[in-house]
Amino acid sequence: MSGIAHWLKQPFHLLASTQSRLKLVIFCGLFGCIFLNVFLPFNMGAWFIKGKAPLYIIITFFSAAGVAALALTQFGIRSLFKIKEVTRGGFIAWLALDLFAISLAMLAVNSIFTEHSFFEWDEYLITLKYTVLVLVLPYSLGILILYLQEQLRVVQELKLKVTQFANLENIVVMDEAGRAVVTMNSRKILYFKSEDNYVLLFYRLDETIKKELIRTNLKKLEQELNFGNFIRIHRSYMINTQNLVAATKTSKGYQVMLDADTNLVLPVSVTYQNLFLERCIQKAS
Image 1 (cartoon, rainbow, N blue to C red):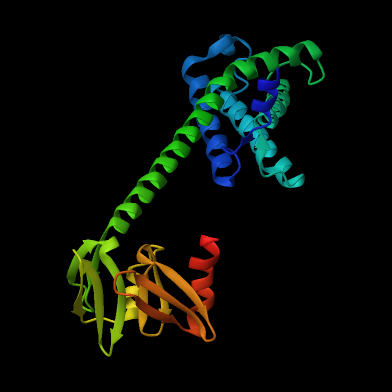
Image 2 (cartoon, helix red, strand yellow):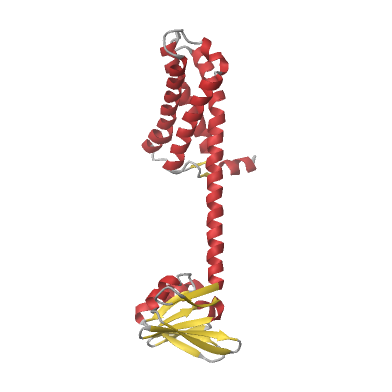
């Protein structure tokens, strides 16, 4: 029992957005209208007085009333009570409310096209039974479609994260004209240094530090290499935090060491100190 109670308390996100609820209402309305017109379940044609209205008009009227009732619960009542998200147990309770509202709408339409009174209890029970039988299929399919769309969205997000991770592993540095100049594993890159209209790329190759002159600027590189591990620390420097060895607090602020073998130390200017603290110091602690 505790497992069931825990399951019922889990959040149910599929109908949290207005777009998802709108999709459910439209799908149930279209599916129900087509299903009732094509298959005429429960011998519906024998219920109505011939000549009062064409049967497809009556059935379409039923479908429209059901859509209106479903829209009322999913939008009107939710907005009235400011309900955004529910638990799984709350969703089951809301489904019961949907069925109740739609069955009342069906009963009202039925009283218009037949001789039955709106207040007949036996007629309401029959209407409720048929409402459940007709609605269960499109409602279930609608929820299933929303679930599959959510899973596809999650898969796309995972693909994006994998792509971003791959981008972290292999960096393409472009010049100001957008031409690829350098392609290398990001861990080899130590830092970039501004040199007038150029940028010097310092990187490790085997046991030595090499440099490459690229015609671009740090501001452009900062936008292109927005992967999290590249951070601007000075008007003239942007470092790769993957190779950050140490950060030392001085009287003038912070300075960073990027290569233990060569004791390569760069200053962190006041302008970029808060960003450096947020991305490197506080994150590490």
